[in-house]
Amino acid sequence: VLLDTPLMEALSAAAMSRMSDFRSQNLSNTVWALAACCFCDVPLINAISAQSMPMISDFDPQAFANTAWAVAKLEVIDLPLMNSISSASLSIMNDFRTQNLSNLVWAFATIYLIDDQLCHSIAASAIKILSQADAQGLSNTAWAFARLECRHEPLMEAISAASIAKIPDFSGQNLANTAWACATLELILRPLMNAVA
Image (tube, rainbow, N blue to C red; front, side, top):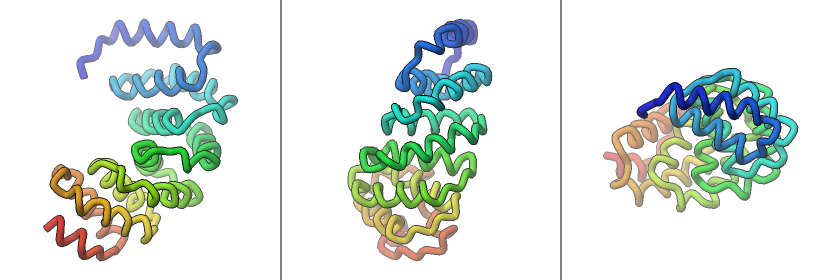
């Protein structure tokens, strides 16, 4: 990413001055953009977090996933925000798309924040829609559950079934993450391992 630091600093300053006007989508889009540009402005992230907390119930699945992903990518450990995202997202988990689910669990795994209730809710929702996931979403979800030490066999079997048809689309990293997840969780998913081989 080609980063224009003066521009990012100017945008950050403008966002800080208008933070009270930001709604949920503005907050999640801003923190996502910071992470996508690898621009870690901790005061701005803290302000986004503080503004997000009272309106967390207004977040939609993409806002939850983007915010959690950004905080994890920028390695800003904000436990109150992540715990709020977890709690508030549970009631709308069935509205999440596969990428939202994958990004959300990836974020929690990246900062190694274990939340069993969230993991089981993500698993239950993901199983229903995994056929829609792409290779990266499947492998990231498998990796995240293994990193969080959440051995959810029905989910891993569903990931296996969905992955077999998409093996030609898997990158080397996708293959490695999926195989690592199966090994870490001590799951022998023969059809998937045969497809990977």
